[in-house]
Length: 88
Image 1 (tube, rainbow, N blue to C red):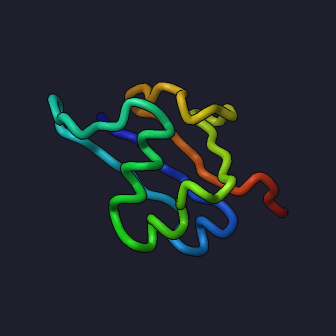
Image 2 (cartoon, rainbow, N blue to C red; image 1 turned 120 degrees about the vertical axis):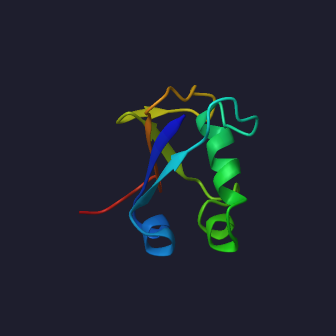
């Protein structure tokens, strides 16, 4: 499964513009929802944990549509994380 993750505003400042993720077929730790992806990403590094902390009011979009943490992740999805208000 392949997913593209994009970061915006202060999340981007901490993690960069984004990353491409890929799991082998049959992998057991593959996130199934946007919320699970956020949790999985937080486990990647201390910087990820800081930028995506569950206490932060981050919003998410899947394939350029605002979504909830329960949104299923389809193959090839583009997921973006950003604060509730972004500039410019």
